[in-house]
Length: 388
Image 1 (cartoon, helix red, strand yellow):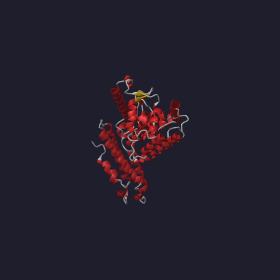
Image 2 (cartoon, rainbow, N blue to C red):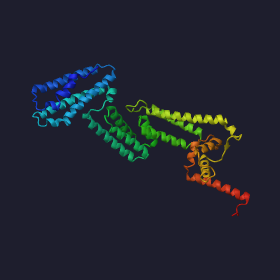
Image 3 (cartoon, rainbow, N blue to C red):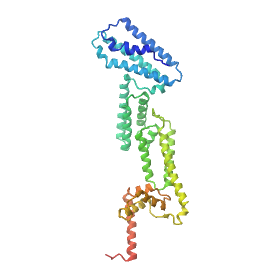
Image 4 (tube, rainbow, N blue to C red):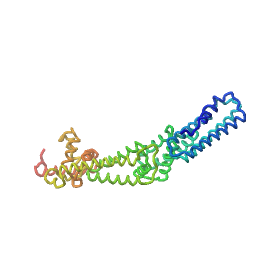
C-alpha cells in the first residue's frame, strides 16, 4: 500500500526542481496552483495515515519516502538554489520551496505522533539534522565536563564518551537514536555525582548496549574472580552479581534502539555461564575427593598459608629452579587440586597462578618471616649457625 501519491513525488522531484525552473516564468496562478496542489496532496497522505492499520512495515516505508522528499526540497534551498540565483522570481521560488519543506516536515512531525515506533526508526530529515546534532553536542560537552571533574575510572569515562560521540556522528541518525542519547545524557547529569559502580549500574539499567562497555563489565568481573581464591566464594560472588543485575534490569529504564537483545540479558548470560563453569569445577573436585573428609586420608593436604602466600611460595621455587617453568598452568592446577587452605577448601588454579605474580608488599613480608623461621629451625636442629 502506497500512501505517497506518485504525482506528489514527481511534482517535488521533477516539476519544481531548480533545473526545470531555469529560464521559466511562473505566473501568479501557477504559484497558487503550487500551494493548492501541495495542500491537497498532503491532506490526502494525512488521511491515509490516520486510517492506517498496524501495517508498520508499510508505514515505515512511506515515512522514509516523505523524509526523502523533504531532503530533496532541502537540497533545492541549500545546495542547488545557485542555479536560480539570477532568476527574476528567485525570491518567490525560494519562498515556495520553504513552504513545501514546511508542509513535508509538519507531516513528518504528525507521523511521529501517530506512529512513534515506526517514525523513530527513520533517519532525521536534513532540515532538522543540524538543530538536532547541535542539541546533542551541547549535552555531550556538558556530560564531558561532569565526568572530567569526577572520580570515575578513566577507562570507563572514555568508553562512555567515545560511544556517545560515535552515536552523534552516526550516518543517517534516526529520531530514536537522538532521543535515546539525549535522554541518557540528561539522566546521567541529573544523577551526578556517582562512583564507578553507580555509573555502571545506571548504564546497565538504561541499556547502554555498546560492545566496549559489555567487555568492560566482563573484564571487571573476571578481575574480581581472579582475586577470589575459593570456588565456593567465587560462586557466591557470581550469584550476588546476578541478583544485582536482576534488580538493575527490573528498574524502569531506557531501551537502546536497534538492539534485539537487552544488555542486562547479555550480561546475565555471561554470569550464568561462569557460574555453571565454577559449579562444574566444584562438582568435579567433590567427585574426585568426595568431601573434606577425604582430605584427611592423605589425598589432599592442608597448608597453613593464605592463598596469596601459597602462590608466592610456589613462584619462589619456580624462579629458583626447584620447580620447572614449563607447563605453569598444569603445575598450578596440581597444587590447587592437592592442597587447600584453612579459608579456601577448593582453590582456583587461575587465582593461585595470578596471586603468584600479583604480590603485595605485606604478602612478601609475611612469607619472608616464614622463611626466616625455617632457616632458624635448620640452624637450631643441624648446628648450621656457625657453619661457613
